[in-house]
Image (cartoon, rainbow over all chains, first blue to last red; front, side, top):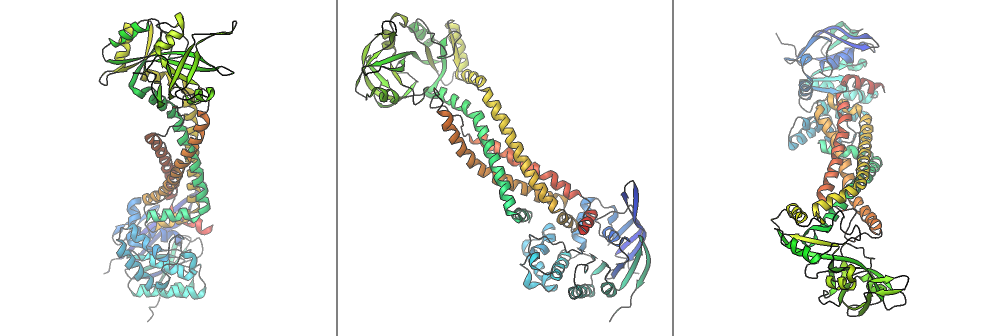
Length: 232
Length: 395
């Protein structure tokens, strides 16, 4: 039997608000196998993004445990959690969040520089990744000189820089038009076919439809977890 | 990459960065000037007193050199007694007086010193010769201009003037043997120096065998303080002051200057610190989202702090370097204004550049730049990532 790559058990996340608490995530348990492509869907405010942040170790559960690739990320101190995010998790955000002062190549190199990869190696890897996302010719452009779809593809290349074990994406097509959104969906599909485990939070039915499994959330709980038919 | 990011971040708002740098420049220049003012007078006074190797000044009991018109009687005996003190290598007597140069329509009044040309420390000869003969004198350029005389000319000089009888006493014709720059006087002061015996003789019984002051040289291996104490023991009618003591005395009198300089320097440093803090804080607040993303993708808190601190250092360092240049220019200008104050020796500088003090002050400014960057960067790097990203997304 295959061991889950991601295992969340009875995860709760409460936020204090004006003396009371907002229960953003309420007792979510979820296993994700290596190579899975999971879409987390649900209405706004249902806790999808909070769950994604918990799985990516940028937030900590109030109670419950999360294990990724054998590491209990919910118990990691800040320094170790930072290193874990750097080496094991790739993040893609709705608003791309590239550093505007850096070129596309430099943005992709940033996590590698942080991981102390040599200049030559990170340059080669950035070139390879920008080629993978179809932006080899745009490597020396700054984000302001790129379209939204191109920026999101650079952000995906950045997320892949340190060869993470899982790619987490929060509404990656939320700021894109239908055409560029489709390009990103196709890219995710290719990544998954190449073996990358992907968790994506989305409202986009096309993106959710491209996933192999869809987890439905409502009021901080998983209400339905359905595998989709694997496409040819 | 942190350095690159810091530079690029500073270049993101060029005009704002330049204005902040200009502010730090002015602040650094003022800080430097205040440091130069606080130490300059003391150092240049100390250097002035230390010229020619004289380490002790001996004046009439209870007075400072040339603080009053009091003189020391039996100067010859005093010289002999001082020379007998262990460690004393030379004694230079000085008798100050007012002289009147006659011969032109209006007599020219000047300050004159009776000295021993062999061991004097009051002037530097610019041209001509020392007043080796009893009828010779050296004169300052201001006196030569006022009397329209030159080296080699003869000057009709008197020491005393009776205003009721309108007559001059102690008149002599002296040959101008040289031009001199008087170290303890200003360039505009009319001054002359001649042999001590000449001044004593011209001054009559009032000045016979008297001196206003003795300058004493000690051997290099002798503690001037010990020699000073020995002189006071040997000559109870005098006050002996070592150079260190004179500098301490001068420091007491200059304490207002130092306090003023210290306060203004501290204000400059504070302004520079607040300026850099403000700019860095504004810059950090603009980039809260970026910082949260950097944290999310695994950039450590320490590295974010370092990057922003580098920005603070960059601002304050660039400001400090240009402030150094501006400070030197303004100090020179201010020095020229203050040095024109009547009666001040030429050799006294109000603003004296001392590399160690200047670099300490500018180092302090750069340190304040580091401090200015640490708080806002640490605060930004410590914000909860998920909350910050959510707020940025909503914003």
